[in-house]
Image (cartoon, rainbow, N blue to C red; front, side):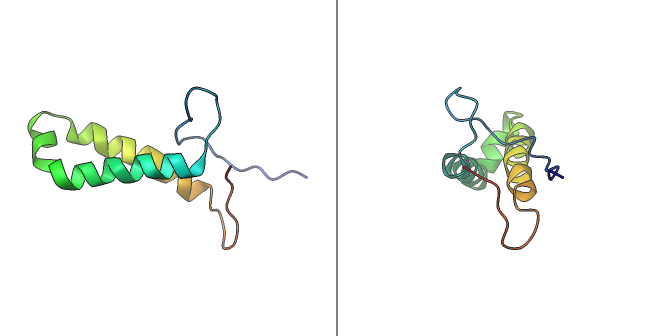
Length: 75
């Protein structure tokens, strides 16, 4: 019986319908860092919530891709 792992979420790389973990991790890290540095400016322009949702979308995927110790689904 095949495992049913829900890997909905995360971001595709360059429109080729493949999710590469390292580029996605870099993107989510840079977005997170931007929020840390520019939180006040993002909030003033009404974009902080959007940035936080984008970070959550990526990090939720990474959490789902690591369902148990020593198991990580990725490419």
